[in-house]
Length: 203
Image (cartoon, rainbow, N blue to C red; front, top):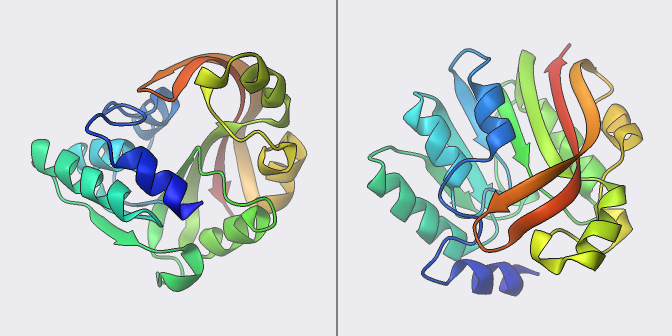
């Protein structure tokens, strides 16, 4: 899996483009600037955008090639991000350290995703916000019909509303929906897909 992402991010072009995810952009503009964490951040498009708004940004991914591209993008936009390479269990953050966590297409392995969500929320202060967008279980038919839209091809790695409610059970739900959107993000997110969108505030 690590090799797949290193290969994808080693190209000259940005795999998912240089522009931030539209849902993230919309939601970041609705909350106060503070300290934010981007798990599975890839080439840094979302982290760099947040930094440009004045957020203090931390990010991680297990792809060293992703970090190279993120560093390049941060330099281009003259911002700083703290980007670590490694898996969640090997990276140390502090309890209640962050004001927000952005999970944007952070499709962790199926057998780890719920535990990862729960561990990540321990790094979020009470009152802090999670912003989440990722493919739903109903996305399988879309990626089967159009591989260019991207996303996992095994249903267990995709999300349901019920999973999000369970993983973030100690959150006030501000928004939680499943919807079909058209993605135009770089080389690997193009076409219609089914996504779960969630904004929650930690109790």
